[in-house]
Length: 287
Image 1: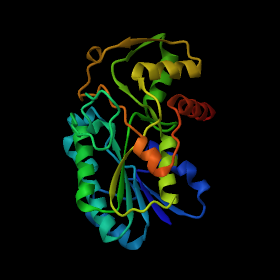
Image 2 (image 1 turned 135 degrees about the horizontal axis):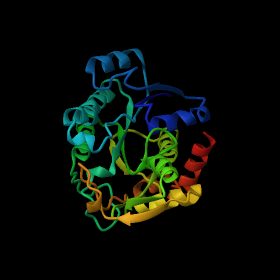
Image 3 (image 1 turned 90 degrees about the horizontal axis):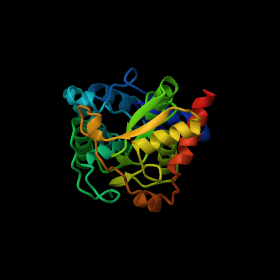
Image 4 (image 1 turned 30 degrees about the vertical axis):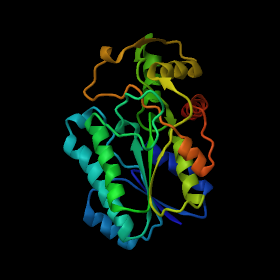
């Protein structure tokens, strides 16, 4: 198969690049904005005309949650309009589409892990634009998988884990929000899951929605504590409430995703978040 990965300079894109060597029988094409502008209908049409691909993994997204509140036009252009184009072209050029979405499509007011059929009630611009991207796929394609994930981190780019490592080494104490609960997701584990879908022979004959995160539940405070513990950093961590750390965009207080559909459909075992955090920290340490 020929597999295209868009947004390949991001955390997930680079995590997929790490795994290409395990699939020598397949051809991978990695692009980012410099090589392929997914917001340009002309550029996409020309690219797909020249490159006959079988699967597109769309890792491209506008993910600056707070900045999106001001930069609404660009957020919708990337998270909704570009996704619509990819959905349209998946039908025109007959390739399968895997698109990454987010827990921010939910209000965060639930009392149990969110399942795929729960009502989406996004609050901020980021969540709304991502949800409308999902809807565009349902409207314009019939050969796609949408994967919602949460709290993504990796050894690449800027993320919560790397920020806590930096601040933990710079300061004697940190205050971290303790009343937002979710499931951290290691980019390497999500990359493995995506590639498992592709090479496992999944039949892309409709639009299917799945949730994927690492197993287990944590608050940002719990997450930070474990980063410090596993890294042997002596910085003290104190819990605070969301209201004590106001940000431009609203955050879901509870965004735990149920992975039952994913694990049953693909007969897949998802790692526990603390075990995956250790793997990531070891890779950061080596680099």
